[in-house]
Image 1 (tube, one colour):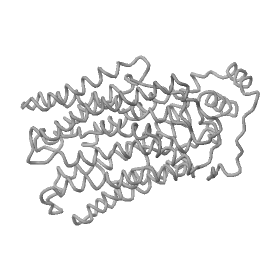
Image 2 (cartoon, rainbow, N blue to C red):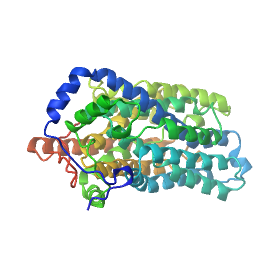
Image 3 (spheres, rainbow, N blue to C red):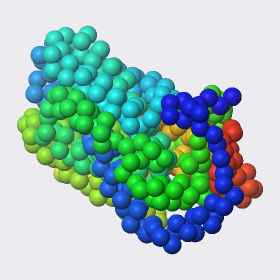
Image 4 (cartoon, helix red, strand yellow):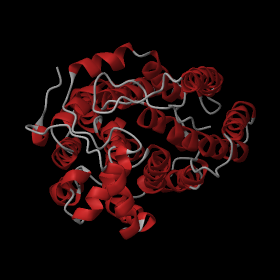
Length: 443
């Protein structure tokens, strides 16, 4: 049974027979491109601000290490790496439950609440006095931050048509890489996040039906254009059957493996940049600058082909494996980053584009990012001090993952293409078990 949650209680699914005529009338009076730009200005900066803070809060541990964290907490051996790993354990565990809560509440409530929670936890990092306390803070930071990324991807899928989503995910993702460019310089504790979270209860918007920054004709136009494209305009309650459908669907696991094989450790530049913290931060900034310049264009219909992105990515890791000189390995890192970021942005848009049934899509988004971040759990253990400065194990494993990604993406491509040709990708309007929509396949 479908279970209505939050502001969906009492709502009734309905479909007007005159929707096509209404959409045509609205099209005559509303400039669609101007309205989409209005949505972009309202939605994307708001959710990006939250994720920038998330990125800065999680990456500040690297700055703290450069400034003496391991010495202050008397860490030995691989204890620092254990702290990095435990963060992703919490992160992975909470992503699916968080999207379940999001579906039962609303983005206007849940996303700011997550931000407040991790801001408090990040603030506690500054008063940690022991290795045990460090592990506890990292674990709960992962739990509280874990729901934001899948939540935002699902949130965007409720506002944009399917062919518009990859570009918006790419914008969101590339802006985060810009944050990475300055994360090593703009070190701070979580108090700023707490303050921003309080304001975010006002600047994070809800779903289109309740968006007060839109006029009534604009809301009706967005509803009509979404109804003609996907299920985002339907009033679907939370449904455990759709959760089970996502868990049983092999494609949802393939979406996760597609991200998993791209979830690779790139930020190894600190080990090559010498002991000066700001020098390391400035050099890593160039890597993030390069990665930020690619995803938005690559995910557009006129963007470069997927094989060329993956070729640059493989070349980058081959250079990292074979070049002993710092300059050459630095160039290899830039090539690898410029290949990974656009590929990740497109892979993240696949379930948002192709999974029908809102609960199933929310579950699939969270599954994908949860499975993907298992790669990050492994990655934190691949780059050990005694393997430097060449890091053959880490870079070799990353290159192998790239080859595995080619296999996973090719299989997923074939499955979606076959379903599209056979007609099995038909969307079920009004909910149900959420059979997949007509597939949209990005390269």
